[in-house]
Image 1: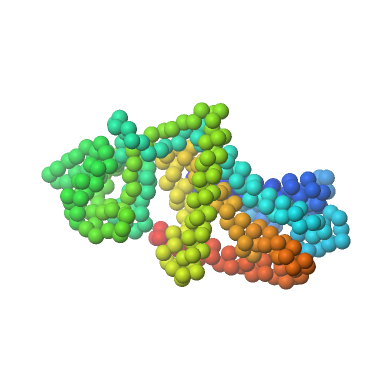
Image 2: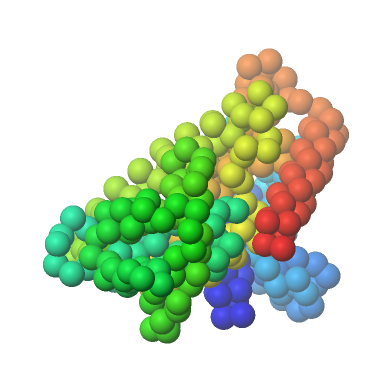
Length: 355
C-alpha cells in the first residue's frame, strides 16, 4: 500500500509539473490562463487569484491547465493562445516536455548524491543480487523477486555458498530439470528458501532460471558533481527511451504487437514495488525514468499529445493557413480516444500477467 501511495504522489507530481510548465510559460507570454487544477473534475474547492481559477478536484491524481484559446476560440483576442504567433504557441506546447525533463534531471541528481546500487567488478564479498526477473520464467513462478540476494543453492546432497554469478550459473547448469533450493535474502532482511526447477530449454537470453544477476555496491556522487551526473543520466535515458519508442513504432507497423514489452499503470506499480528493495535513491531514479518517458511520449507527433499539437502549428506554417480549429479538435479527440483504448489494453495485459 505504501508503494502505491508513493507512486500516486510521484506520478501526480510529474503530471502537475508538466502542466505547470504550460501554465508558467503561457503566463510569462501574457496569455490568459483560465484555470489550473489539482486533480480532475468534479471541482471541490476553487479560488480566483490574479485572474486565474485555482481548483482542487475530486479525482486527486495529476492535474490540468486551461489556457484561453487553446481550442481555437478568441482568435481576435490578444490574450488568446490562438491569436499568438506560431513560435509562442510551440514554446507553450513544448514547455510541459521541458518540465518533465527538468524534473527527471532533479530526480537523477538527487539519486546520484544519495547513492544508487550499480553492478560491481569487485571481489570483496559483495552478494549476488537478482536485478531482473523474466515474465513467465521459473524464477517468477517460484516467487523470486528483483533485489533478492542469493546466498546459497542446494539439493538434497549438495550445498554451495554463492560468491559469484558463475557459482549460480554452474550449479544451475548441473541440475537442469531437477528441483533445487535457493536461499535468498530479501530487502527486509528475511531469509527465504525457494524451491525451483531450472528449465532444460530456455528462450534466448533468459537462462534456465529466467533471471539477470549482478553484484551491487552503492555508488555515491559528491553533491557538487551530482547535477553533472544527473545530466549524463538524463541524456543517456532520453536517447535510450527514444530508441525504445522507435522500436515500438516499428513493431506496431510490422504487426508484432504481442512481442512488445509495454507496461501500463499496473506494470509501473509492480516495477516500483520491486525497486524499493534497492532503496529510496533507486526509486528516485525510477521516477526519473518515468518522467523521461512522459517527456518523450508527449513529444511524439500524435494527435492529443503536445507533439501532435505542435505538428498542427508546423502544418499551418507550411501551408500558410491555419487548420480549421473544429477539424483539429476532432482529430485530437480521436487521438485521445485511441490513447485511452491503448491504455486499457495494456492495463488488461498487465493484470492478466499478474493473475
